[in-house]
Amino acid sequence: MGIFFGSIELEEEVLAIIQGTKTRSWSIVLYNDDYNTFDWVIECLVKYCDHDVIQAEQCAWFVHTKGKYTVKLGSKTELKPICETLQEKGLAAKLIPNNE
Image (cartoon, rainbow, N blue to C red; front, side, top):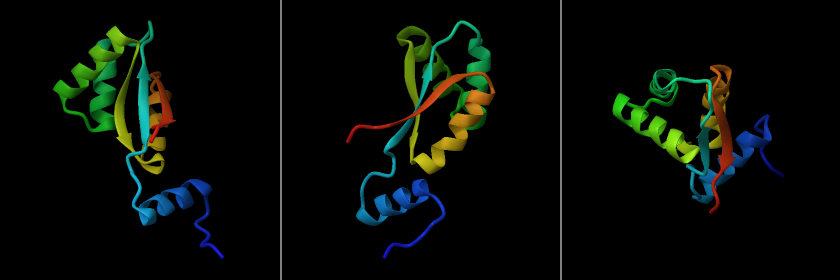
């Protein structure tokens, strides 16, 4: 009989912690677009992903030149609200599982 946590995501997160598996098993990937300015992307990365300005500038440049870039690693529970906020701010962000 398992413990009910109220959501499958939280249950998976707790199980991963108990089993000692990676808790940074999810990524927020930011995709390049033709709408957002560098300044806006940098501002969002600083405000919502806790990047410093230099890190945010580097991520924005990688997104621009490579088409996409992983801007934050963490657990699904931690990253989901951050990714949703980036999307609400107009950024093309996606939450994806990392391959183990």
